[in-house]
Length: 388
Image 1 (tube, helix red, strand yellow):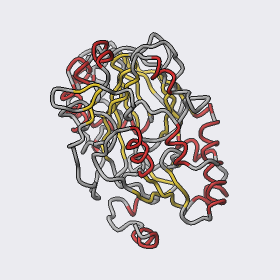
Image 2 (image 1 turned 30 degrees about the vertical axis):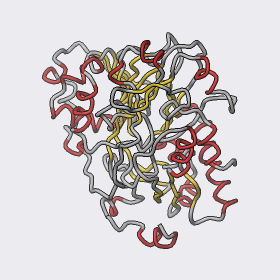
Image 3 (image 1 turned 60 degrees about the vertical axis):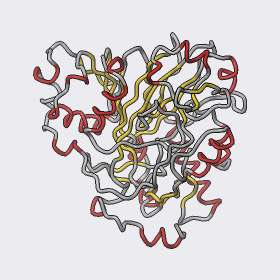
Image 4 (image 1 turned 90 degrees about the horizontal axis):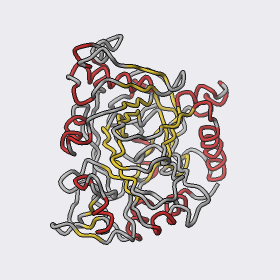
């Protein structure tokens, strides 16, 4: 298996700084080219990089998911009081992963409906909301909506709108250079991952929406890591218990620096169990990440590489535990960043803008057993052993 650091450097990432970004904001931040600024339909959401913007390292925080307060049958989410209409539909995309909802406006949900939403996303993994009025309300509205569920993650290297560092922007500009970059070093654009697994408090509930997109293409694929764990034999499940992966953002920071970008926060390295438990559902799932997972710390290199490759191939190759979300204007998707992995799909080659944003709640520290939930000293001996 090729070193993960090389994969991070070679794969095109539309959320990271690109050498073609030559524009400047009035405040002096770096942004996309003037040509792309003129073509952007939502200029208030354009990515910027301020070299002076710095944030301290994250520290451990206790986290209790809002979904624990949800109603049993989601009656607050699927009710007249929340939806303002009984004319809505809920459709399962597959039996075990993904639901699509049309006719309910996220912007109109009250707090009780949001509690149900948190649990519903935890149970279904990915929830697609159609025909939303969310994006026209601006970045602050989206941030306030997500902040209800918990503290929001600030990405250390990606672009964000000025004054809204909690918003992670992906932007692929309408130039041939940016089109060609995606396949300059690779034969495909697929890069399965969960976002920022190197964080001590892992990213949890995530909201994503496309502001501007091509007529077709640019879909996002999701895989169900709960089902991936359940498919393993009891013997393999038992073997994975007690194993932990070292996750790191060091390589991402170095790659961004080489491209001319910035680092808002120093890189971090953390240890998480391979088999993790979802506090809301009580279900176990795999927590592996090809993009940021470096090695299994209890194994030798060759053993770690072999086992991780098996787990990556198991998740990526099983199309019967995956879904594909096709983006349309005013679609908003929420997903559980712990129990799913996802990948972009750059399959369009016309020079058009694809512009989107992501906001993520910082959830609980990943644990292998709920008896360790919110335990600040969890895995302390392993950190000491590795000198972290």
